[in-house]
Image (cartoon, rainbow, N blue to C red; front, side, top):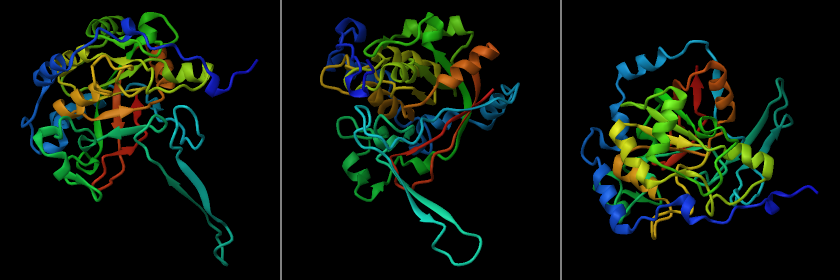
Length: 322
């Protein structure tokens, strides 16, 4: 019998898999430990200010075979448990609007992209914690119906640096991590050793949980209920290493959240405390195959968000060049 996506089996939330549990008091201690407010200028670029021309030059030296691997999901217009607000795509011109040659075909796209279906970048204006954005600015004063006046995606520009690929299923010898499984600091260190990489200052870190492969084989489920991702206890290690961008085939957070009363604690730590933009909902399956073929898990990473003044993020197609 063929299962529909809505009928796809969803593992029940597992306390031990996404734990240990973290209290809000413990979380706030973590927040202060990794907080980097006031460290960089301009402030609305956050940790991306770590990336100098020298970082970019060193990253370009990683290009050895010229393989280009895009990492965006297809534009998703189909409703599903993980796509409650489908993107739009329709034809606005079918070659019959102009009387003279050449005829033209045009289309329209739109998306409420901060969800689970569109590959996108979270800018620093996307996440507030206790009413404040990164750097301590009042979220109510900095973001309104006209957009963000601080931390907009337009402040970031194009992001080019070394990408480090934590391909957890490959390092563990599994097809995927089950939804609800947390990735801890010890898992990051073990993956570095298994894959022959080391996360360093100015690097972007991409985590593959196998989400896309599992969805293809078993159908869609609601990642807000159960998804593999980082436990908050792994974030201090990433902060110590000096990362500038964090992303994955989920949205970096393990769910259910291990933190009492916080749905997306890794978002709060990365974007709000550390000033680190996030890449959500990537398709990392082709990159996994390419890295396995080349036997290396670091590469030149290029991310070019749309130039949206006041935008809290942007749909993106990140590209790895090996």
